[in-house]
Length: 565
Image (cartoon, rainbow, N blue to C red; front, side):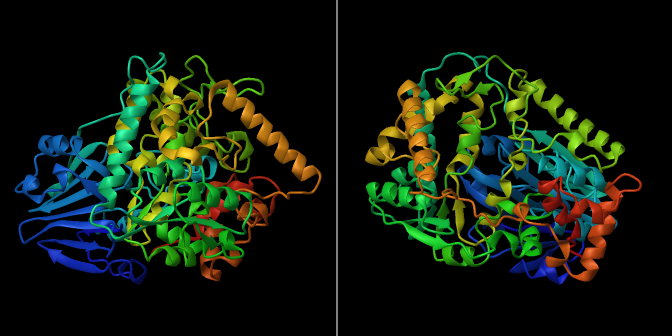
């Protein structure tokens, strides 16, 4: 997916080895990876047009963007297009960026002592622009919230191009931005909705995304957990297309057995990839380099030898993001009960689900930096409340999509090589989700209407969580309770052991975090120095890493040892 445009030539070996092509056009260096997630639309002496990610529709036609790019025209083309994309158009003395509705492909820019740099990898933009000073506020935001607040980045002078926008960079540091779309809240966001109609619309959109992704491909792999999302995607893939559902697990546990059963009922054989021992404790520096600092590298699930196994496909599909934009994972005003199905409560626009820490739990961190983190998050939330006054809290982590807690998984998949098609991330799916009333998210009502029938018998096989995809409301709730009770009983009498889900028990947060196991001596010195810059006077980096608290924060703090220069 990597794409970089800069006024200075990339020279660092850690950067240049990521790009298959580097050439100069006028005063700009253009570099891009050899990947199914990079598509050169137009390459001539007058114009370069390159897409990071996946793009379908009129914006993908180079004839439509010929000549000097017009922001309004490009925005209208983007509205009629689909995919997960960041389009960069290089013309005479101008760089123009078009992002998709949710900003699912992060495009960053920096104007520093080495000139302008625009690209998809934040650390490469920083290195080529000379903007390499770490933003201490962003670093603490990352330790606290697992993401960096938009529009900031890991570096002080590097920013994220807005989602749903056309942004141009010209001579004399001239920057102009035109917003073509925002996730404006619908008037009926809390009203009862026609789940049949919304299910039809969702099914049509996701099916269209799948068909676009398969066009011209010979072999695919579906990242298959056996959950309802991956079953929905598999049910939409024609039986005639060579697609292997693939699950990655430490052992053949309950998740494997349920995934194998549901895949078989959908007419496919499941491929099992054994996760290596100590997988989540290995290659930390390389993981950070792959996704860029400021994103939780613990979510690089498809990486290293596992990524090598999947490279044989032309296209990789998945069901990422469905839980967040179609269901209630981020809906703060939904409530689960032991004795009845999930319910939607009254609006709570300031309640944000997904925080790992309260600020008080990072007592070692400078109060001044914490206060600046708070102000940034409040400013972001204020912007959201202007367009989503009742549901700003639910969308705090969804606009842009880079705020999603597990976004590193998506970026790691993009870095493998084959084209990645995640239909729930597609621009038109995101726009559809922004208009859907929250009453359709509760109890997965719209999702079940959209995909339940297509799943067939596979829809009646429980997931690892105990849910049965075809069942909802009171029946579904009672079935869920029965399955969970039965599983608890099996564990008590010794029929089944724990660790039956997707995660490995060897995660870093489950063991002491020792920076010297992941970085060189020089890098460790840098890590401890940077860490102490974030702490209160008198607090040491050594005590921060050796303390009993802040397990997740300590793991994320390892990113402070990384440098691309």
